[in-house]
Amino acid sequence: MDHRDAFAWTTIRHVSDQLAGGDVNENSVTVHYWASARSAAGVAAEQVPPGSLAALIDEISQRHRDRDRFDDVISTCSILVGETPVGARDHASVALNAGDTVEFLPPFAGG
Image 1 (cartoon, helix red, strand yellow):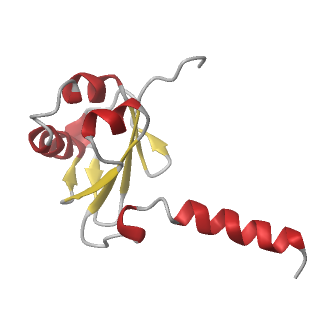
Image 2: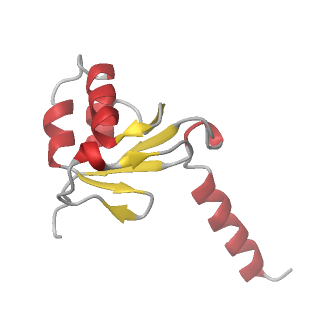
């Protein structure tokens, strides 16, 4: 094994370690919070029941209702379901299935 093989394995291992609890819960949706959304939520990731994106947002809002600025920060985030941006789609029309991942990405300085 040369050093390139070791680097690739280390990189892949590092990315996989970012999952909540080290693995994916196949019966729920994994929510990842990034940057200021992570700070507002007080956690990097959590599991929620499948349903619609609107139901997920209601659920996380209830879970974090005691956190200052959570709803304000989440409302400014771009949302990805898997690798697909939600954009302006109605959140009630976006179905989330067990095993899906939802990412909350706040606006970043510089683009």
